[in-house]
Length: 546
Image (cartoon, rainbow, N blue to C red):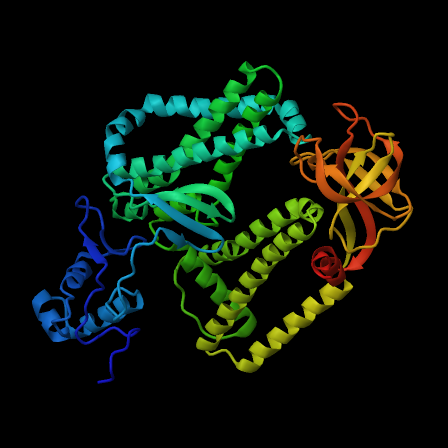
C-alpha cells in the first residue's frame, strides 16, 4: 500500500477530521447535518451521519458495513468514504485549522470576527416572539411603505442634495447611520435563527467589495426543518433595514429644511438601495440565501455556475459533461448570470467613480488599475477553469487552441478598431479677480491639453453633476496652486489646500443653476477620439509612468 501523505486521507481505515461534528435533527422532519469547522455545513441522511460517527480510524470497510448493518455493504462504504474525502471531511494528516478572526470569504470580501453571539442572542429570544406578531409585522411593513412614499414626494429635495457638495459631517452621518442599521440588520438574522432553534456561530465586521459592513454567520440555518424558516432568517435583515429606512424618511419632514433633512433623506435612500441590492440573488447576499433556502438546494450558486461553465465549454470547445443540477433547465441561465454579475458590479462601480479617480491623479490611477486588474484576474481564472473542464471532458486540444487564438484576435481587433471619446476629468475654480482656472492633479492625465479646447463646467455633486456652463481652454501653460477639496470631491469645503496645476479658462456660456452660480466644481475636457488601447493606457497608465 502506498505511503499516506498529508494530502491523502486513509481510505482503508478512514477517520473523520478532528473538527467534524455530526448534528442530529432539531425536529423529526429536520435534516441531519455534518459540520466541519465554523463555515462548512453538509445536509445528509441519517445513515451517512451514523457512518461518519463511526469513522475513528479503527475499522476497515468490512467492519463498518457489519456494524452498520443492512442496507450497507463494503461497496457502499467505499463509495461513501471517497465522497467524504472529496468533501475534505476525513483526517488527512494536516493539523486542524485553528479558528481565525480574519477570513477571506470570496473575492474582495474580508471578514473580521468580533464575537460569538449565541449567548447574547439567546438572551434576546423573549423579545423576538412578540416582534413576530402579525400586528407588529404589519405595522413595520406600513412604516417601510410610507417611507418610500415620503422619499418619492421629496424627490426634488433629494435630487438637489445629490447634485451639490455636502459637508463632511453629513457624509459621516450618512455612513454612521448606514453602518448602525447594517449592524441591526445582522443581529436580526442571528436573532431569528436563534428563535427557530439554530446557533449563529460568529459575528463581526467585513469589507464587502471594499465597502464596510457587518456580518452574522447563520450557516447553522441548514439544520432548520422548514425552508420557510430558513427564508425568514435570510430576509430578516432586509426587513429591519427597510423599516429603518422608512423611519428616517418619515422623520425628515419634521426637520427644518437644510443639511440635517438632506442627511436623513440620504440615510433613507442608501438603506433602501442596500435592501434592493441585498435582494439580488446573483451574489452571496440575503436574496441568494433566501432563494437557495426556498429551493432547498445547498451551494446553488456554485453548482449553477459549474453547469453554466460546462455548457459554455461544450458549446465552444466540445466534450461530454455531467450536470451538477440535472433536470433543472433554469440552472444554466442562472449560472451564466451569476458568472457575469460580479464583473458587472465592479465595472459599473469603476464607471461611476472613474471621473473622481481620474481627478485624484496618481492615487486614482492606482485604484482604477487595481479594479481593472481584478476584473482581468477573474476573467483569466474563469478561462482557466473552463479549459480545465474541457480537457477533463475530452475536448480536443487543437480546438481549444483555435478558440483561444480566435478570442485573442477578436480582443486585439476591438482594442485597435474601437474608438473611445476621451475626457479629462478635472476641476475648476473662480479666482479672486473673477477669472476661471482649470485644476488638474499632478499626474491627473497624460492627454495633452490643447488651446481652444471646449471645457464643460459641472456642479460637484455626489450622483448628479448638472452643467453650470462651458469654457474654452486658454494657453495650456500651467502654474502650481492650492485648490479647495470641492474641485476634486463632492465635499462642501472652500479651504484651498490641495496641490494642483492651474490652467487659464475663458467662460463661453453660463447655465442657470438651481442654487445660483458655483465658484468651484468639476470640469470635463474633451480630448478627442482614440483607439480603446490608447484611451485606457493614456487615461490610467500614463499618470503612473515617469
